[in-house]
Image (cartoon, rainbow, N blue to C red; front, top):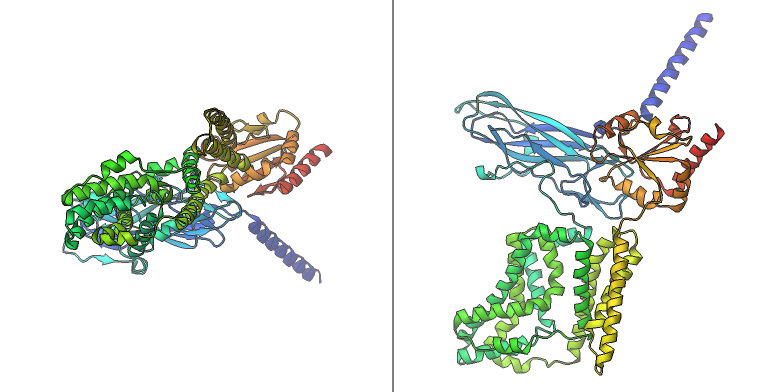
Length: 621
């Protein structure tokens, strides 16, 4: 009987130990090593010198997690990048990354560009002709950052090696891993000049908002689709008021040259239209070539504000606040007859230069998208086709000059169309403003400031009413300047980083004992600039007035893990920090309060609850 009891007790003890072990293992926090698995493959096990091969880096991401794409939409986010080590005998072309997904997460107001599940990154390698026979290895690394809906792990770098066997010409080669490389379209054969190394950060990429990605999708849906869309848009530009006076000038230009011969007038007008389209193609070409610089300018709030003020001013002109007209001296000069195809082409260039400023406020959105995409040749082609759309009516009017008498006369219909374009311009201004406002803590001051600048410019200088005396113009100019200055001050205050109400102690390698000189509990915030949830914690929780007041009872320590160094790394290991943000509480006596530790975003109420518990435990002791 005693032996049965002993045996039962032993079984119970073993069961308890197994249960405790399972509980402890399940309680362990996720680490990056079990979230992302990385494997590498080559298309050949045996290959000849001077030949090309395929390399694949395959990352399998655990369900519920994601990694940032190669082109993340936030400039502070860490991209996924594959880099191959430079070797004299082996060169690699640019890496082909998979299509990313746009996903919404609780810590970000905008959708983010991410990878989930299993992703394959491909590159083409090429061996030199004089590479040694036998076994060799291509090596490199994969840099990425894994996150879930609450927090992000530290950026990781995984090194890899791809074994290759070089055999002499004439020996059979051996293809392997066909299941991986046949699933993906083969990388085209590349010339030697194309084999350039891509840095860890890759080439600088401009972040896209979700709206810009939709515009990108519109352009990239297919060249025929994009060409039709830009052609129709160019055709619609003829409804802008300052384009209308060019129509009679165009007809008068060709009537005297063709002597009534429709064929000759058609040829001349074709050169004329091509001249207009050429001006627009140059605009698209410049946008594509200078894409990076143009795109980075749009990341500066003041540049965007200037563009928005110009667009709103043009919208005000559409509603009758003032009138944009082509100077009569230019009209007279450009209206002079120029004979021949070359003369017609030059006239088209001239008219294109005259019309372009009138359409700037409307096409500036398209210019910005083409610039950010950096599509040089395609951008030039799309804008050329837009110019053809703009010039199409002139082609018919010059060929059939009698149609001029049948054109609808200007009247209330033009006023209605004018106001419609004014409304569209306001929409363009909003399109540029909203992404900037999302990044600013004082959105009300930001919008009021822009309203002040625009109002001062409009009512102080642009708007011209009948009967304004000289004295009134001086007074309104003075008031306009005051409005503009007030708006500038409001915007400047709004775009400044919000002053923190928390007195942070920034960790610089000192021990916690050195920091905890007074008898107060400690709150340690592990954060990084690339951590979106950390920014959300700053913006919503630490900015809360109740949390700021409660922080006076703590020593608030902030540990910057943006670039892990000798200061950050030992502390993250000491406190077992695997994801950011991580909040650690230490009692006034130096004891870690494990039950209050938090990984991921905490709202103000939950943060207050934990802070009160930490303060209460300190008070009890």
